[in-house]
Image 1 (cartoon, rainbow, N blue to C red):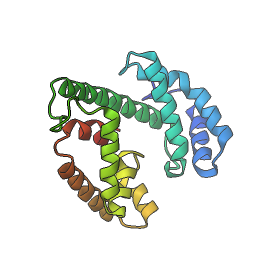
Image 2 (image 1 turned 90 degrees about the vertical axis):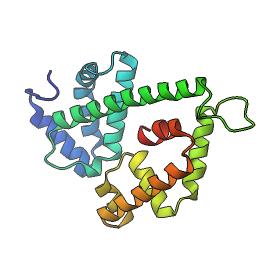
Image 3 (image 1 turned 60 degrees about the vertical axis):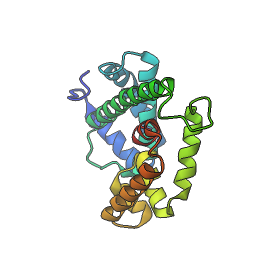
Length: 199
């Protein structure tokens, strides 16, 4: 099955996606999952060779679809939409793996992840805690916009709807938050790469 150019009776799948988006239909979601799970795992193989990782990515895509179901456009093609989600998630996974490798390399070389007085590099968990503390220092609007964008993968339009502000305001909040974090965490570049840009 060509996920990017589906030629099977996907009108039914499109209908299921509409039911999920418009009616919170869990039965439709289950049917969509059963119909697409295996083909999407095969499709992810274009990008990722490890089968368990592919399966995790596809499962995460379906979880995200259910969580964001209200934001799916009514005329969306199910096959193309799912293929696009899996492709983007697969590429993000590969980029994140690359940056994690860069982080490990920096840690092995003892820079820039050392503080004076420390005899070992920061662990990733410690860096996550550092990021969390820094995020809590941000103005609430900046923090919310940033967290929803980077960690919940919401679009500017989705965030604007949640925060009851304009899309331009959301983008301004995110830009300010990123600038503050970049300044606060300038000594921890791998932290920014791994935890902010590819969560």
